[in-house]
Amino acid sequence: MAHLVAAFLGVFIGLFPIVNPLGMAPIFLRLTTGSTESVRAALARRVAIGGLALMVASLFVGSHILAFFGLTVGAVQVAGGLVVMAAGWRLLQQGDDSKEREQQSRVPDDVMLTRAFFPLTMPLTVGPGTISVAITLGAKSAGSGHLVVEIVGALLGTVAVAGSIYLSYRFAHRLLSVLGEAGLDVFLRLSAFILFCLGVQIVWNGYGALTALTLG
Image (tube, rainbow, N blue to C red):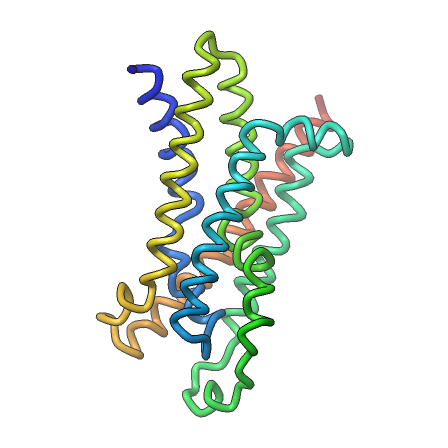
């Protein structure tokens, strides 16, 4: 039982701060502007399921996939970090004038639902930082003497993270409605800036990993 709890906490604590579903909630709201509650609920469910699939795949077969394509975690971090930086910069540059928002064309529901995986799931929710950490955690679990227990605990940890994604996105409007329009816009700007900084940090980490690999 102790190994099960340790495996669960190791995965949950390792992934939850990086996924940061509460911090991503205002960005989810901005990217789904004009969508109905039913569409947002469907998107939250799809993002949670897609994020779960990505985290599980990264945990158990991520290192093998990278090896098959001859890639390194550093390369994934650099490429994914650039995508995250671009998304954060784009959100920062969006106008905050209410009239401008009203003039924005509403995205049809069927088109919005196609965006569930990209960009909402990958890279905004489960990005290169999460994937690289999941691959590292999976490598540690593979060397454990309690493999089955480690697998069950890791699965439960990823399910818990995916559940937090669903709850944060599904009820994002209610969670952030207390801030008001002005407060929500400030929170969105801060979240977008943090997202941009996160992309820079991921690129830097990837560059450091590639440099160490080259020098080594």
